[in-house]
Image 1 (cartoon, helix red, strand yellow):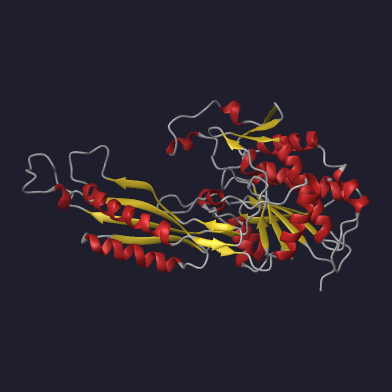
Image 2: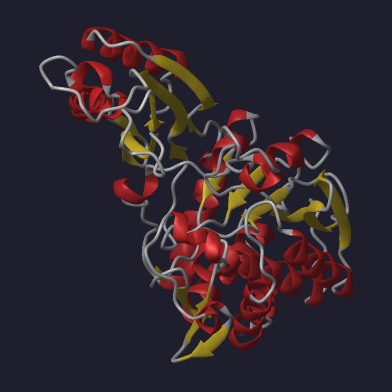
Amino acid sequence: MPIDQAAADSVLARVNGDELAQLGVDLVNCPSPTGQEAPVAEYMLDWFQRQGLKAIRQEVDPGRPNAVGILKGTGGGLSLMFNGHMDTSYTGTAEDLRIMATLEPEELLRGSIRDGKVYGLGISNMKGGLAAFMVAVKAIKEAGIQLEGDVIAAGVVGEISRTPIGPYQSQNYRGEGTGTRHLLTHGIQSDYALVADGSDLNAVWAQTGVVQMKITTYGQPDAAWGTKRVDKPPAKVNAIVKMTRIIDALERWAERFEEERIYQSATGPILPKANIGAIEGGAPYRPNYFPGVCSIYLDVRIPPGLRPVTVQNEVEQVLRETGLDYDLEVYKSLLGHEGKGVEPLVESLERVHERLFGRKLQFEEPGRASIWTDTNVYNELGIPAVKFGPRGKRIHRYEELPIEQMVKAAQVYALVALDICSRPRS
């Protein structure tokens, strides 16, 4: 069904770049590290109400809400949901020193506009996407277009890759699908979904799953001073030295895994990855002792169709072959998915993209597509979903995003909503 030209023109005329940029700044200026998304959620809920949308505050954890706005249809039509996470890649606090050496001045993290771009912590990942679909829904509402199906705008908590483990147990570590899974299992459903996470305005609907493991080996916690290596070889008594053998074995396995498990999807190859992301061992205040315990934390990005238990068994075989004592604890397991039944949504995206920009829709390149996003949760629960969103560049902790990208995204979202939500449900 072709999109009504007059309706499209009326909606597109209401997508304003200045408004979009300022909304992006406002969202950036609501700090929202994982677990503390309430400021931006409350801003969005108030914004939805002011635009005349039905606003739903979904409490995921105490004081940690999803923010949902619904433009109700007349009934009987297909519904489309836009999804964007509200949490940011970095906290914007000294906690970030855990994973980086230096911190830039805080004023660079705040939202600002210059040289045709929006700057600040989280604008690219992914408050620019949030702003784009918020303005798209507002444009449809202001144009007075009556759609048959509902258009849903969902800001969700907890998408950034953070996992509770050991002493890190608060909601500040509950990411990778926490908000979207709650959203979809607590009443907010749709026929199709567009996830506005950054993709350079390219499309992808196949993504990796996640397996995370804690691997521990053991030594003899005795004083190291006064001993001879021939009597107490570090390779037998020092847990850190023993761990180097485990790391070497895992790295050799990872090389094979990353080549053998490439997944060929409709949008191109999906690349698996294994990464040792953290290590703990010994006592910094007592380095004169052989460390009795050393642990590493392994993150494995798995292709669609590969079960986490299969990866666990492969890693255990590698560990057994070292001949060392070990303990393995799997503390995260998420499946990868390739969306099924996405064709009507993809076809709509293709038509809209070519209509607006005069060129064919492209697929996201493999290195960027091979990640986990909330797109997987939709496809896991049977809602055909595609990721398509604006992406800028990370400079340090803060990011930049061209306003033109935000405008293009909003235009696409608006016209796809006009298309999908004008179709009757079969």
